[in-house]
Amino acid sequence: MPPGEPWTDDPYAHALRAGRGPLYLRRMCQGTRQELLLLDVERWCAAPDAADTSVLRRCTGPVLDVGCGPGRLVAALAARGLPALGVDVSPAAVARTRSLGGSALRRSVFDRLPKEGRWDTVLLMDGNVGIGGDPAVLLARLRDLVRPGGRLLAEAAPQDVDERLTVRVEDAHGRHGRPFAWARLGTTALARAAEATGWILTGRWTADGRPFVELHRPGPGHPDAGPTATEGPDHR
Ligand SMILES: C[S@@+](CC[C@H](N)C(=O)[O-])C[C@H]1O[C@@H](n2cnc3c(N)ncnc32)[C@H](O)[C@@H]1O
Figure 1 (cartoon, rainbow, N blue to C red):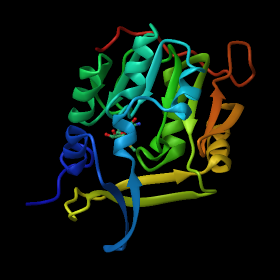
Figure 2 (cartoon, protein in one colour; figure 1 turned 90 degrees about the vertical axis):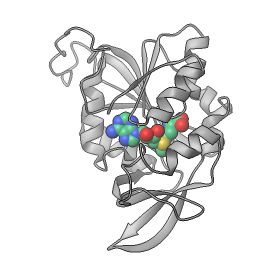
Figure 3 (tube, rainbow, N blue to C red; figure 1 turned 120 degrees about the horizontal axis):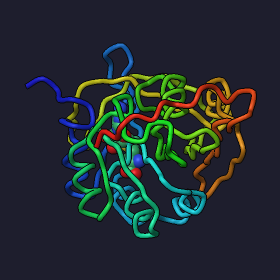
Figure 4 (tube, protein in one colour; figure 1 turned 180 degrees about the vertical axis):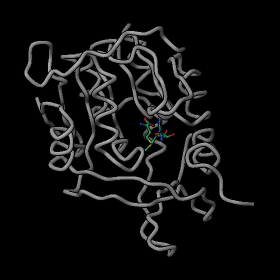
């Protein structure tokens, strides 16, 4: 059988249903098997920890969690009374988010989404700056999703890296999906890529060894504000 679609038809779904790994991104290099990067499925399936809470505290609604996974943050935000939506390509991730009481849509961040240009806070956690493999394209897309003056809270890699890579999701038995493009950015590279795509760096902090940045889309009247997104109907 050919390897399945990334995140939807590979061992990720099984790990989310079980609530545990071990699960990895295997870095591919010209068809050879290379280094494994751990995917922290147990932490993603647990309640928010102190580092997550440092992010949740900074959220104002409505909040869009991009690549929400099993939904611990969306559920925690909903429990605090903040309107929050997770978006994820994985049916297992969306199902688990909903089972926790959160709202989630099975859709790519690059597809048409509800409230484009009107989100107050967008979250990009747990290495999700890698989504799509080209951080400039992703960060520009997120800038269009957030309202003018709104914020992006993004997690960086703990190492000082700026990498574009090809990876596949793989479990401890070597079962895997097909390779796809990914990226890993430390704080410096993430801040640089964000500023190049029109974000303003307004904060950075580390919690439990996990580095985060806070970025703002320039508000109305700012010379870099750019056009405001047209407000069309929601596509839920
Ligand atoms: C590294 S995991 C992060 C998990 C997550 N933040 C959590 O709390 O569990 C990457 C997540 O991004 C999702 N994803 C990958 N490509 C995506 C895309 N184009 N649009 C939306 N989600 C995507 C995957 O399905 C997966 O759930």
